[in-house]
Image (tube, rainbow, N blue to C red; front, side):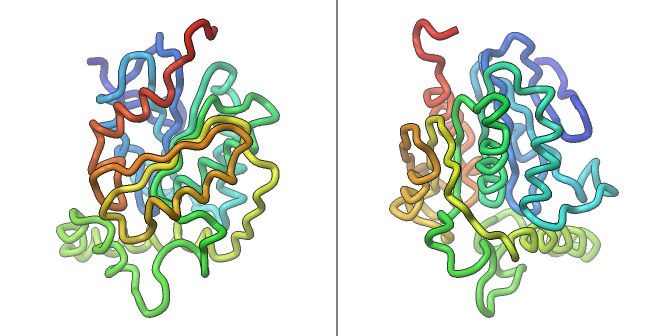
Length: 251
């Protein structure tokens, strides 16, 4: 298996596949980074190449400034993607990443619409009572523990804890002034994904994302929690591969 590559500061390819039919751009959850999609990249079939988006302010882009809001981040990512979406591409976003992926798809549609979009683990905006993330008296630490069983070890180390909380807060703050507009919708198939044990959204609620597109909408509930891309990587890879399969006779 070839080693991972950096295409630009924005994109990390865990498994390069130069002959792939579909380029799958993957957007991480709040506080997440491109390596969150390494297992998915390895589990997908050879005709799909994962391009994981490297969010600013973390990992190898620690010194890059955070965006001030969702619209600015969408503009930055869309500009970075433009040279790489002349062929068949699709989008996948998890939690906050689903909101970014969805809006990036809309922004790029005038250039070349995505072939498909996968939205995972995010309450549709018509169900929001405030920005996605901790609500009421729930602090960021308890929120993280409720959605990620692996975060306890990181939180136990003061320096790592401070860094993680800083990044998560910056990501969640992107949504503070976000005003959702359903128009214009995507014009491609959309797949909604949710884990059986996700405390933030149910399968029934996820069906609200049907309003996101004029194309077909489908839903899958997978075994796992909020970070279903990580907790159900192999099952998710089969689901995504089937969803992205090029129709017979298509170019």
